[in-house]
Image (cartoon, rainbow, N blue to C red; front, side, top):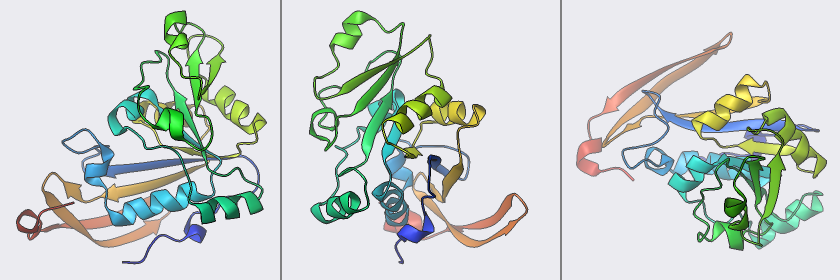
Length: 226
């Protein structure tokens, strides 16, 4: 299986927001376990690695952090060295959007990422909740009662974080899309549906449409899925 290449997902010069999303044939963003990993696979994970490799920031919503339990945002020694040579920071910075600040603070992502995670909340967030943000993170408070995507994008760019991956979930991606803040969609369509797989047999592009065919893989029930 060929891996995704970095030049499949090039970053242009200047600020750019890439929405990264995996969904099943019926539009679900997660499997029966509530996590996207159960509808993913090696090829999709290769895309995730390629998109993140030269990014500056990975933006996620609170619900996604609670469901997916992200690992610390790190990069290997060789990739970190090449990032620094390119004028980037050693690893992408994790950016978490949460109005309630109800996050699994004991997870390693908040204390063991290579750069301090940026926690973005709203002015109405309770002071008690703000006090729970670990010292290993930076707290950024948006004006008003919502985090405006245009405001957040500018805040990130002002911090030198120009190449932004927005990984969702759905509500956050919808907010960015409605605000006109998405420059590119990197969409993976997964043929994994529960314990059944549908194999992609064809795909073509015409105008703004992508036309695909997926056929049931009858061996998927007997062989099991990742």
